[in-house]
Image 1 (cartoon, rainbow, N blue to C red):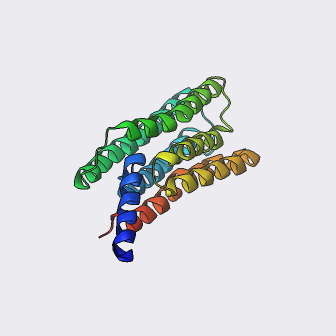
Image 2 (cartoon, helix red, strand yellow):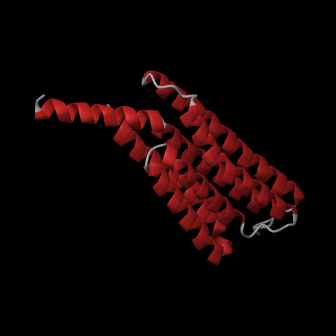
Length: 202
């Protein structure tokens, strides 16, 4: 067996092992769109709070419910787009998108995310709004980092950045909204572009 053929065989075996242990069909375009949704949602929320509060960043019951609805719409659009485009890409790559690896990925992602979401809802019910943006970033970053072992490496770095932004915003809670915009808006767009050019662009 020639050295070149031996190396090719090793490379093919490594590729098969990677595909079997990691979900590699995540869509970069869905990350870009999620970032755009977040920026649009943040712009609407900012206008909403300022309009109803007469220039003061305050949340009464009605404004809070509208902002929460805005966030839920952004979340639903992001998840829906991600599922659609990732499934489409998995089919194109002839990769199974519902298997043990996918289940492990979802479990690793959802456990810290759901726990964080419940904690945030608890403190919101107590009228503590100041740290919400930072906590969202931290728990989302933890979820990404935890799930990264089942998918592509960029997810880990995105998670670390989100955690860092959340911790920084804890020192300046008055700017938590803007850190949220950076983390969920611009960082998703940057991540999506990197993913697209590295893994999807032909």
